[in-house]
Image (cartoon, rainbow, N blue to C red; front, side, top):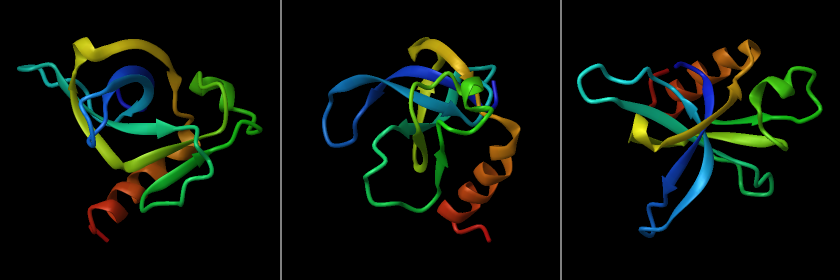
Length: 113
């Protein structure tokens, strides 16, 4: 389940509200509990860039693989652990060309460089 783009009921930290949002899977579900770690994806391209952000542009030739509707940003500093039951749908996959960006972004967010 690595690098799949999914839809989840995303709970916002500042409230108990949830909203159906895209997310990127970063782990496989744990065998014992069924939990997985995901990174939030936003289509708000106007937000101030944050540590670990990865832009996915709609005009890229392999954008269609993502299943996203518009250009978006993977927010590697906004990680959540969810149970697989919160996955509402699979949209697509993250093209391979972004995989090293994800690795580097995680290192950056957790100061592992």
